Image 1: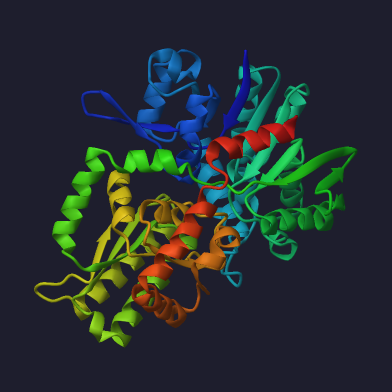
Image 2 (image 1 turned 90 degrees about the vertical axis):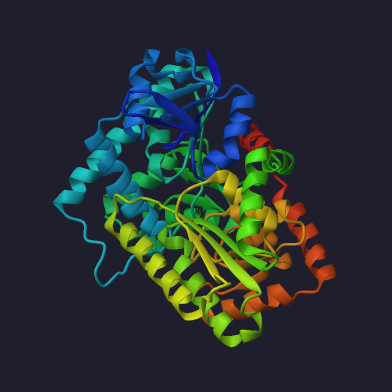
Length: 474
């Protein structure tokens, strides 16, 4: 029976189906997959995830018990859950992404939203069902006294549900997002706020990416639940149970990343990009079109930079890779459209016959992203709020002379801040000035900062990150 399991909404692979019914498998997207897929496969961890697409569902239905590795797919040990689409939609889109994500990233336009009525009550019930499906699958897959690592805001209720099913298991929950302070977290209906906190406290260990997010969670437990919190020992005691709170700053496996970035498909993209931009300096950003990533203000800052520094016209190109995210939600469709409008404004204002100041690409392409990292002179990472941000860590590894312009609201700022150019993500003019400073940074300073950034980025690679949490479970 299995001794270590990981549960997350998104799995390490995804499937697409052609018109003739053939399935094609590719690497899953997102920072969690990027960080964990290699180490999970190498160490024989059983990964439990949800089927996200029609292709995923077809693959699951062809697999014995939903175990894709038993069906012959080269996925590593993987069980994928075929949750009813309506339940999945309400749990994933209405609750996880439109409610919990918005709360923890402080994204609500509070004069207008949120509003919690009878519709939300139905959606919350689906979120419970979704978490229950994970708890049941984990209970079935886990061997006696196994260790289970439940990931992120999609699965906040799973630890308590799993404990009710299998009290013998050692359970951890890890939050890859920020955590809201109590006054904002309390936007949630009181019973929902309690259920989220008590769900996570069903774990033996609750992990966070930075001390800032861990403190906010403990503050919420004290304020909302009246729990007994020891901030020095990082423990929360509620209803007779103690949960340890840990801080584990996920880093990057620099060696594995470099190996992947030197493969022929990446080299081919580098050649194509170099042909497109010539010998011009490159400002690079790589993000999903996620509201918290602040892409629009980044484009505004680049526009202000061009307006303030005509000496750079024709000498710099901004590669902005903004990959689609959560297009089931209208806010995200509008945000993507806004990104495209701002890109067009910059093109219309500054482009010439022989110079494209901005190359915007909205088609997800991992090898092309790696190529852009390797070519970057400046990496722009300016989220309004981010649990960590692995882009900020991956870029300096692949471009030794890359200057990092980093938002102070990214979790990565706790480690990378002393060696990056820090910005207030709402200050467009300040970000424009930082872009200029990054471009004119002397070469020796650029390399010195880059060396420190790489050291910090690789301090806790995924295998050690995983091991530290397993150790915390005893």
